[in-house]
Figure 1 (cartoon, helix red, strand yellow):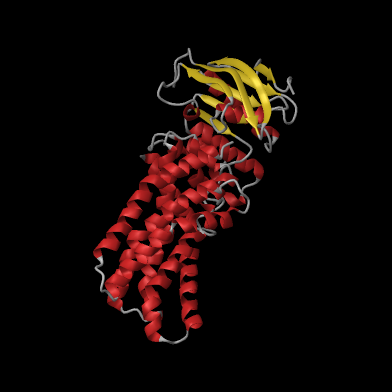
Figure 2 (cartoon, each protein chain N blue to C red):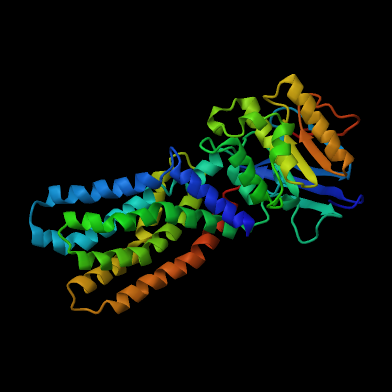
Length: 207
Length: 222
């Protein structure tokens, strides 16, 4: 997947939205195999920071780099973004939703998707249209995407929301596996997400 | 290329499933065109003369109908975020969506056009020409509309704004489309020149539309 020297580096990032500075001068580096937990109050810019790293918002200043990654690919192309929305189409079945994202985001065409569906306990619902899923099940479908396509950086925005205790435990196991495989996690969260000794970044000091 | 074809197939599948826009466009076209004889009255010569123009206006409105949801539905459920994070350049991503939209919305219109021609007293031979001009011209409508769809993506009631933005831009397509159809049916002007310009408009918008739409989407990320 990547060499052990991989490192996600953000240098003096700043972001403005609607003419208001959301945050400025945010710097951190996360080496391979480590997780960064972004904490802070509502509106302190946790989600915005993740969206900036994912390339979904433009940074007003600063630099984002994945050293040791694939040179010609942007950070966004090497990252998974798990946001508040689940990107599941109601009229497609669970399997079709996952298959589309796996193909689109670059899984090998022959790769089977059943293991990912089984890992999030949706294998029995594979042929059900996503419209009939509960919020937690849709979330698990999103998480299956992270497992089906290998990307070194996971950007997780409130990953445990809508998940029951058992699913939260499974998610924590997925995250530990990802880190053990040399992955990088940046997660915005209010509560503990079941990782041992993550680094922490507190947002919203300069508000 | 897997990403491109998988997006194309996914959008076509969505359009043909429940709640998709594929059948709606064709039905809307059918309804609009069949209203005209009621409004104009049973003057067969008049209907035959304005038939190609009516069919073109109907096709124009029908192809805009589902277009406003092209990006808005992906924006609303978070899919658009992930689409921009793929390795596929955004220009190709929007092109795949536009091609899927054309195949599911515009192509059915062209297929049912000969049937609608009967209602407007346009003879079968002439219908072939009208369908041909629609085949050559509707890609321009889709790819020009693509820009409007991308510009209005974050607006709640983007559909109306999109129609206002896009319809004026489609005037050249309308002029040359109807001119080519009329040239083929009543003459005396030759069919070739307006038809060639129509093809040129489609090809140009096929190239420019995805770039403009991708730029509009990137701008909309603020």
